[in-house]
Length: 166
Ligand SMILES: [Zn+2]
Ligand SMILES: [Zn+2]
Image 1: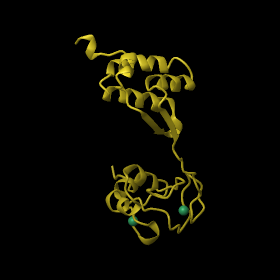
Image 2: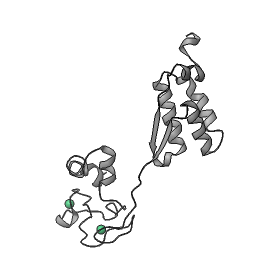
Image 3: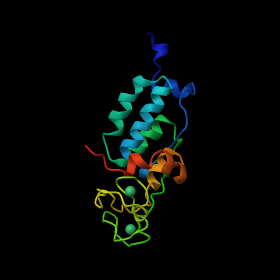
Image 4: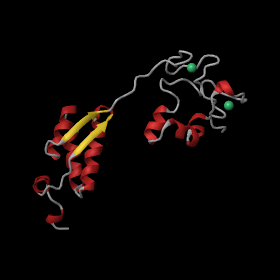
């Protein structure tokens, strides 16, 4: 490979090879930023610059990571904080996040059939497995999968809410 195929950061900038990036993540944490920048470099066929970036980014504090990212992208890095839902008490029984639901709670999922526990009578249901986690059952999973809760229930609920037998 000749040097034309491996431009330095300055050459890449001059040629407009670097994309603008918007970082959306959990408070734009450092590892997420580094990972995103490295991927963007690889996509722009500038993988050879990724190691340099990582070295520079990890040599200081969090601000150093941002500075390094902005250095690469010419100040076009935007950090968007993701909205982290607040963890609530169970809407029905009032369990705290991480606790088992109370008796006859209509939110509790059955660990055998994945349906509403209140409506079924499956043997072997595990209340601890079906604990309240502070979010509506399936809410976070559905969001991550890009489906609504109905579709989640139909396609994924069994996988997420039932306890494996072995
Ligand atoms: Zn509950
Ligand atoms: Zn059941």
